[in-house]
Length: 87
Image (cartoon, rainbow, N blue to C red; front, side, top):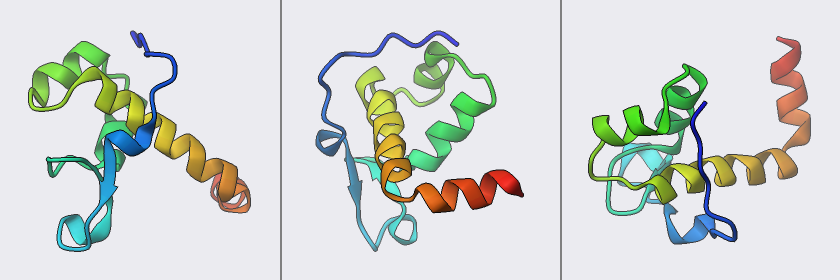
C-alpha cells in the first residue's frame, strides 16, 4: 500500500461528528466522506492516489486522519476489536 503519512498530524483537525450528516458517523470535516468509507477503501487495497483521484475534495492528510482516528478507537475499545476478530 502506498501511504506517505505526515508526522504529528492531529486527527481532530480533520475528523468530526455531526448527527445531521450520515447519522452521526465520523466524517472528514467539510465533506460527507466517512472515516468508514476511507478505511474500507484502504482495506480493499486502494492506493492513496486512487482515493485522492476518486474523492478530489479530500487531501492526503484527511485519509491519514481517518486512520489515526480509527487507531484511537481501538485503543479505547480493545474488547470490541477482539470480539469482532473472533467472528
